Figure 1: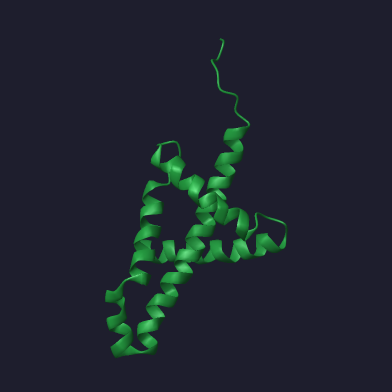
Figure 2: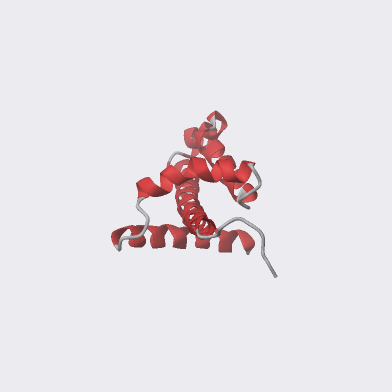
Length: 118
């Protein structure tokens, strides 16, 4: 059940991102440019995207893996179907996570570092 919910959430994020881009939301270029900053912020421990980034990296490795060629050889169309689902999930996840990161980044920019005087 958890996998189905995560998969449907990724597909919903993909649909929202496509619609948001048409309505003036962050463009695909802005989102893709945010990925390296998101990885750096996660590596520094500033952003909490570690597990989600690891899942996206694993999905990318699965899609480009030479081991994944075996199902395509024997199952043809059905072997490609798992790749299509994985790529769609990956696209939705990247779009959802970059949107989350851009919101985090914008909120962080409005905070002035310093001490609270109480």
